[in-house]
Each structure stands twice: as C-alpha cells, then as structure tokens.
Length: 433
Image (cartoon, rainbow, N blue to C red):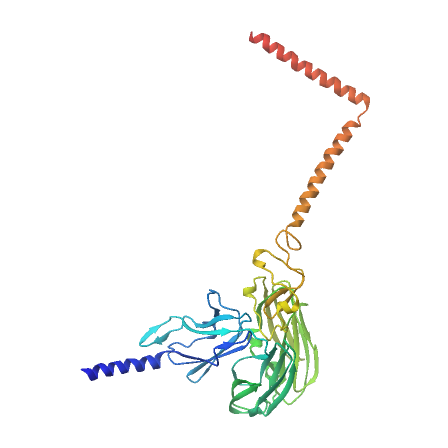
C-alpha cells in the first residue's frame, strides 16, 4: 500500500512539473523602454496569441500600451514587448488561455512579476524582440540616456556594422535575405544584447520574373504594413515619424513614385528612378483629427497601397507609442516642461512627446484660466451686460431730448389719467356705502 501511495504521489508531482506553463524571462529587472523577451513552454491546451498577453503595472486595472509580438518555435512560444517608460513593479499576464495547472484544465490568469528601474546608465532597446522571417526584415534600435556606439553583427548573413546613436535616436537596420534559401538560425548581436532569429526561405528571393504585379517586384518591410497598415492612436498635433524599407526583388530596375493621400502624411523621397536595390522611405504624420488614408507606391504598371489609420485622443493612457514612431528620448523634466493633468481639464499651448509621455513646454493652464478654459464665455456675458446698459442709457437720453410741446403733452396726458383713476375710486367708494 505504501508503494502505491508513493507511486501516486510521484505521478502527481510529474504531472504538475510537466503540465504547468513555464515562463522564462531574460532577467527580472529592466530599464524604462527596454525590450522584454520571454520564453513560454508546456501546459498550453490552446495556443495563446499576442492579444492574450499584456503588461500591467501592479495595482493598475488597465494594461500598459506597448508594442508586442508572439512567435511559435516548435513547442515554445516566444513573446516580446517594448516596456513602459515609467519605473515600478509590473507583471506579465496571460489571460483567458486554456492551460493545465497540475491535472486541472483552467483559463485562470498566469502571472509573472518583474521590475522596471530608472538609471543614468546608457542602454538600448530593439524591436522586434524575436524574428521569424521568410524574407528580408528590419530591426529598429533605440538609444537611451547618452550617445552610444552600437555594434550590430549577424554572422549567418555576414552582416557587421557600427552606428553612433545620440540620446533618443533610433536606427532602422535592414537585413537582406537576397539569394538565400533554406533554414537559418542565429542571434543578432546588438552590443551586449542578443536577438534570436529564425529565417525560413524555400527559394532564392531575387530572381527573374515576367509578372507586372508590383507586390511581386517590390518588397515592403515591415511586411505587415501592406496588410495591416499603420494603425495607431496618437496625440493630436505632434510629429510621429517612422521608416519603411522597400526592396527590389527582381533583376530589372523599376521607376517608382511615392505619394500620400493626405497633407497630414508626409513621405520622402517621392521618386525612385531606376530602383534596383533597396531604399528607405521616411514618413511623418501630424494630424489634429482622425485620419484614414494611405501611402501609395506606384509604378507604370501597378501600385502598392499602405493604409494609414490614425485615431487622435488626449487620453494619455490610450496613446500608442513605440520606438519606431517617436524619435525623442528626453524626459519631460529634461525638456524643462511639466506634466499636465488633462483629465482635470488642464490644457497646454505647446506640447511634445517625451520618453515619459506627453510634456507641456508652455506651462499647464488650469480650468477656468488660459487657453482651453471658459474665459471666453465670461467675456461674452460681459459684452451682453454692457450692451444692455448702453441701450438703457440711450433710451433715457432720448426721452430727455423731447421737445417742450411733447413734454407738455405727456404731462397733460399723465394728469388726465391720474384724475380719471381718482374719479373712479371716489365713485366706487360712494356706491359701496
């Protein structure tokens, strides 16, 4: 009997060890805006998606707005996210995904805690945090706290470059997979960081082609822009900049024209003559209103449309910001600005985006004063009162300017009216008696 109990105990222990979801982070303490890399294995009954995984500040019921992604590598799930810029205690939460806890199936939240700490040391972030590619891809690197020399190396592609990035600067780096085939695995080394890469290519991706379809000729990176577009919620009236890499996948050059649907979307360059390699398109968006437009890459035969969908809000918790969009890396205090409480009806005449969020450079205007207050209503009421007083004075002055004959006639009429009233009162009194 004792052996049976021991066997049951060992079986339950093994089930618990095998079935629980194992979450591994590169570390437990991160810097603001750094890249979180997480490996998850075992226990999942249903495959999680990136939407099921969020970053929460402990004690906050709302998920932090972050750029994130998830890839599957065999039996492992690799999740990455650009972390919030505010220091504090945070948790990674997997919500609503069916998984095992011991021998029990459950959709309870899986949680893993970590800390974001401030620092004066220089460091980097990169996006994405994992790469799974079937064609050329782009990695975006951002520098924090000081100017840095950044060494980037990817041995499988014989890629080795060095860059100098100032505080808050970003660099978009294209990794071309032209003339490659098969499966390639390795890490992109970015100073002391490692970015795991999986490349799966069946055929050479630069060949002769007779098709006129531009999507078969020109490759856009990041590739998701062609299908999903640039879809974000932004603060109104600020410049948001990002880059698009385009590559020629055939051996023949092509002439391209690049344009945008709205004046709020600026793109450069606007022409690429005899385009036969790769180029970077610089895009800047600044809008005061919601925007539903596009960037058009056009040849004589065909075109590629990249949707640009922007919603604007002054609710800072809903603003989407990541290293590929905002180029500024200074904090609000380093700008010499202040953080306004927009939920309390404070307003600002001149704003910028700092590393710790929206920053007011002109000083916050409290409710009832300055721009954005109700001072104009008080001004309108004052004008109405002055107009009323003026009309009253004008009427009195006009009455005083009547001719002597008009004045005498008015006094006579007033006298007759009083005498008539007096006579009526006497008559009524005698009748009553």
